[in-house]
Amino acid sequence: MAGSTGFKVWTGSRLMIETLTWPQCEIDPERLVGIRRRLLGGAARVVELGAGVGVVGTYLAAVGATVLLTDLATLVENAIDSNLLQNEGIATDSRKSTRLNSSHLDL
Image (cartoon, rainbow, N blue to C red):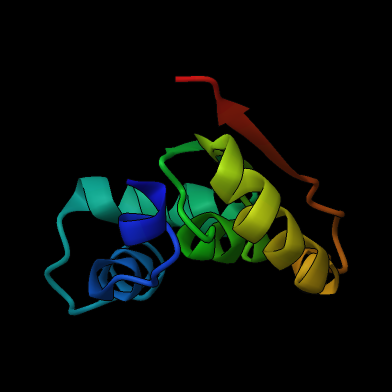
């Protein structure tokens, strides 16, 4: 199953990133504005279950959130870990260093 779904970047990943971090219009719901403020302000802690290649979690970490990425062992070892290493410098800003963590689920 992981081979057919986990090693892809889904269109929904981009939509999730845009919704959570970029203002869409002046009438965004107040709850979404609050979530966005916490994410961008470094006050958010996020657990991404079934992270796949880790696109959403890595982006959220890069903008300031503390993120724990989880998925099956094969995805963590063959996709998430290498992606985190390649993007390690992106997750550091002038205020603090965001530590990226990954783990796997033994199912």
